[in-house]
Length: 181
Image 1 (spheres, rainbow, N blue to C red):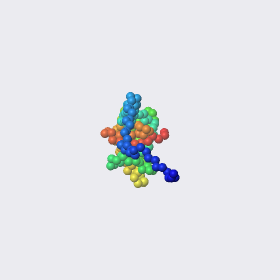
Image 2 (image 1 turned 180 degrees about the horizontal axis):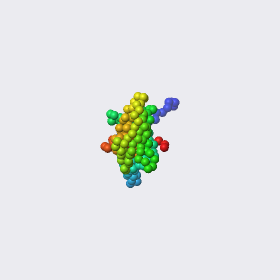
Image 3 (image 1 turned 180 degrees about the vertical axis):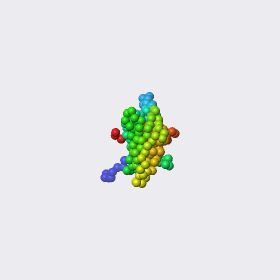
Image 4 (image 1 turned 90 degrees about the vertical axis):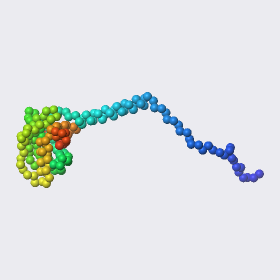
């Protein structure tokens, strides 16, 4: 008897080498499609609500409110942020008054105004400003553009603690942030 291990072989030695057959996915039931439809409706409602909030102007009582300029339209027609250190304010006088005013960077200003719905109407030729020249560079440009934009404002919209002022063709002119009274 030899002490050599015996060789073990199995069957025929051939093996099936065909690609595995994929298992088909389970069909989507009614519950799945109902949830997809509800999700789609929810997305459409969210989009519609956001668009309505952006495009629909609503009357706002601005009397007694204070605002600080954050963006203005410069002489080139481009909306730009206010430079650091330039304070421009807009104040709507308290109840029973039709005066708005504030500080335009170098000078104080005031206008008589009326609001009808979302339309802001400044009395023609009724604006008053001081005539001081600003020593700081660039501030006079901001002031000139701001007062020009304010005089050309036609529509006012309030959204997210910001006041947006538009010209007659709905081009944004000024964006102001509400500040405590």
